[in-house]
Length: 124
Image 1 (cartoon, one colour):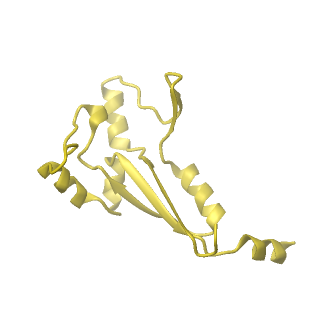
Image 2: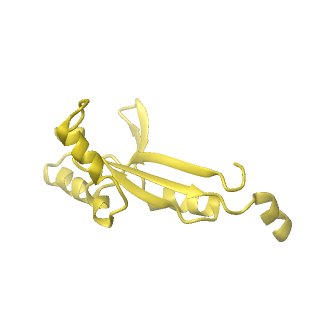
């Protein structure tokens, strides 16, 4: 990636309140690995963010979205085009700390600030 390039990553959030709801109903809340031998899923977690932080030498900006949209809980609120609840859900998207506990989706954005070649020459 070029110097000052921006990396964006979107994935499912590890929402602790949703995970607790799954536990209360004795349902499996998948965090990491292959699901039913069909596909791989890794929810965003601190180790993923840490790898990005170390790779790009910069702190990622984390945002949360899909606060109301929960198809995995049987709440496909706002999943249709021109949905009033979908539009409301999109207004909740942002960096507000409390969203991390309930948001279905998480994204982080980071800008590369150090050129690896310069780092290699300085340490080499």
